[in-house]
Amino acid sequence: MAAAAIISMPKKKPLPAGLPREWYESHNRRLKAMRLAISLLDTGTYDARRATNRKIRTMAVRVGVHRPSNLTCKMVRGFIVANAG
Image (cartoon, rainbow, N blue to C red):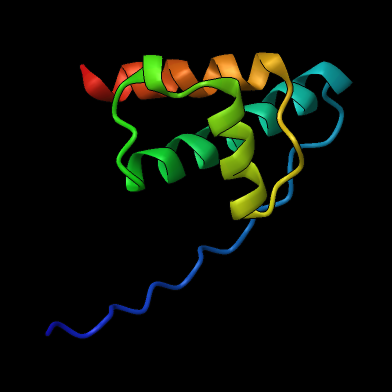
């Protein structure tokens, strides 16, 4: 049996100041969608058609992030499609 690898989280850098609020909202939405897409891929959901809003929102609860909006769910499916190609 292989030993589990210890992965340290990278240091977070502060976001640049002075940008419009929409930039911060879209940036955080992309980060959340990427985090959820990676979690879904890790659990074996490789097809975007199988990543329903319900499945994505259930994964959000398991990962510990707030309930994603419909737009975030759409982004998650987009990341999964991009990964497949």
